[in-house]
Length: 386
Ligand SMILES: Cc1ncc(COP(=O)(O)O)c(C=O)c1O
View 1 (cartoon, rainbow, N blue to C red):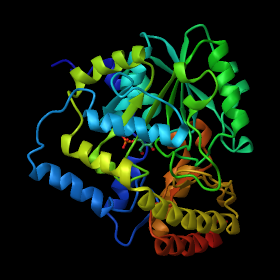
View 2 (cartoon, helix red, strand yellow):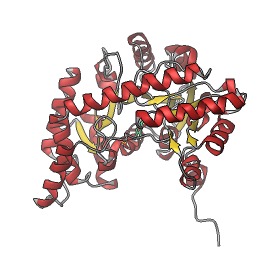
View 3 (cartoon, rainbow, N blue to C red):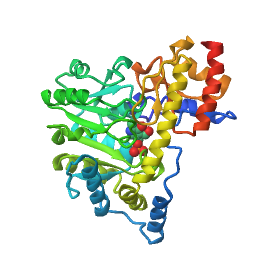
View 4 (cartoon, rainbow, N blue to C red):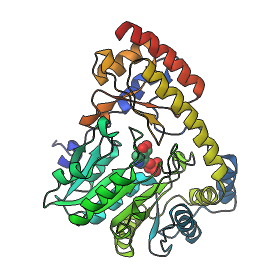
């Protein structure tokens, strides 16, 4: 029999994160700093709304774009956060997480072979989504010296006549980097100069520490060339509900809607009801979780630095990204040896792109107690290997 698997699927590499979870799952007493999702359970009053929706018989499809109520709720939420106005009738679509949004956005704006600039280190799905959309991901390496913010010059150097879009994600997974206002303007200038679409993954927008977050679409001139992707997963501890959204111009959203309609039909109905409750009525929950993350962030960053694992200060999301060169190991050796010897799971930086080599991602979406225990184990480890 011939190989039934398409070239395109064969070319996709499995995510570099999974391997460590699979090993960790076979071991006992593992402290995982590997997970990329909130350890908190969805706030109770949001859960109740989802359950009540089911009990009330809301078990049917919704409109392709999502319920009118939720689209209005998303529009009001974006307006409240950033003063931006999107028409719920034709500028907002409810997705099955940002994960779906990536592909919808990329497929809508790229022709086969078009290039998409992907600053890295970045979330494992970014380059894969570009590839799955039939476009070509062009990695743009960022540096710890710039606090892992992509610069205008870096993007400019990667632009070719085939470049169509830039896929950015700040606050960033895996580095925790956010963009300074100057850097945002540099990116905007490149987008304008080369007439590019900016796809901005803002999923961690509410989880920032000591800074004011601004949507990329709020920059002068960017509203009409930005596709904002965001959702409920991280800020509201709702990963399992699978609700995100895309917002952009009516023209772009018409394209996105066609794809979503054939691919998904509509996002989960009971989850849409719960999502609306979250957007309207969970500011206190979000703030309480954010404050917990902030305490953990300070503990883990200080802990890494004390052990000689130099860690720049992440200002968003729930990841620290220390440099592990003091161990004399590669990031892969570091994670494997640490897991075997001390049962602490982290993810090698190169799982997020070449420029992540020499770093590891440690998620602090776990209890302070776990973080403190992990740091004790790490101290023993660094005594042997530092
Ligand atoms: C940067 C980033 N974007 C998107 C996602 C996926 O989010 P969703 O649950 O909305 O699909 C993740 C999940 O880890 C992420 O880290």
